[in-house]
Image 1 (cartoon, helix red, strand yellow):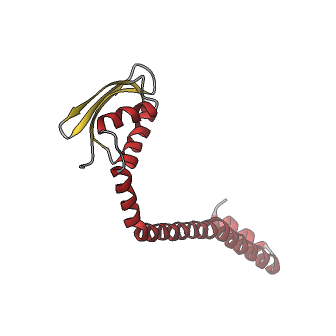
Image 2 (cartoon, rainbow, N blue to C red):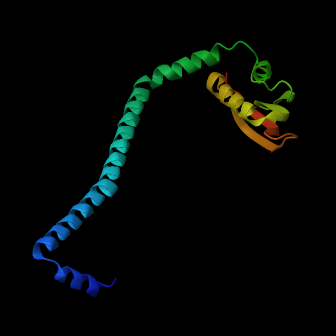
Length: 163
């Protein structure tokens, strides 16, 4: 249908019918605008504001407790009575990497660890545990595909915290 045909059809309607049709079209357009655009937009804004408020509260809590958290971490690290080499070997075995562990040896200030056919996920969890509990971080890493899906061969240099 072209525009001229629609105009001719509207002109052929009774004035009352024309007003009802135009009013209905305006009402449908308003409902589509409100339901299809404004309500989802409002929901997204409310969600973003709530997320922002939650993050601000988290940041305020972290700032208020930062010194206590640092002191607790330092106390935990200082309370470790195992030599770093023994600690790394034990924690690797605790993380389920005993079968993959091929060696640990001192490497300058850090410790070099060799893993073969190690489950990648278990290795990553182990790195997180070393960092969070003991302050031992990954300084350098070389990773290759393992013999099985989901496994890797890795040579890792771990940096131990200064005493």
